[in-house]
Image (cartoon, rainbow, N blue to C red; front, side):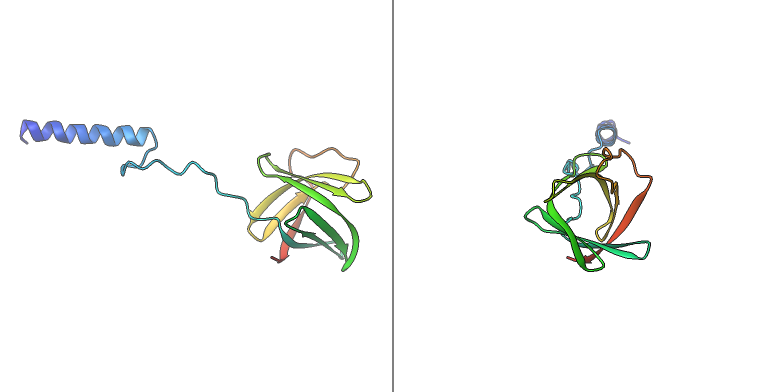
Amino acid sequence: MHPKHKRIFLLVAFLVLVSLACNIPVSGLAPDPSPTPAPSLVGAWESHVGSTLIRFTFESDGTFVMSMEAVPVGQGTYLLNVSAAPMALDLVYDDGTTLLTILEFLDANTLRMENVNDLAPRPTAFSDYVIFSRAAP
C-alpha cells in the first residue's frame, strides 16, 4: 500500500473508532436525543378486579370519570407526571379524595396502575397493581 493511502486509511479508521466511542453514527449525524413519548392516557381503560368491571375515562382537558359495572362512582381531575420514574398519576376526586398512584404503560393499549387507597402514600415500585386495557381511544 502506498504510504499516502496508508495514512488516509489510518485516518479514516481513527475517525470511525472515535465516532463509535462517542456513540455518533459514522454518517456524522448525532442520535436523536429526544425520548420516545409515552402513549396517551386519554381514553377509556378497563380492568376486572375480581368480578367487578372498573373503567377510568381520561379526557384531554384533565378530567376523569371512574365507573364500576358501567355506573359512574367518581369524577375529578388528574395530573400525569411522565418525568417521574415510575410515572406519577394524581387522581383528585370532586369530593376531595386524592389518590397518589404510579403508572406504567406496558404498551400503547395496556397499562398498570398501583395504589387504590386514598390514605396511602404514593408507592415507589409496583407490587400490588391492576392491569388496565384500552377500551376506547
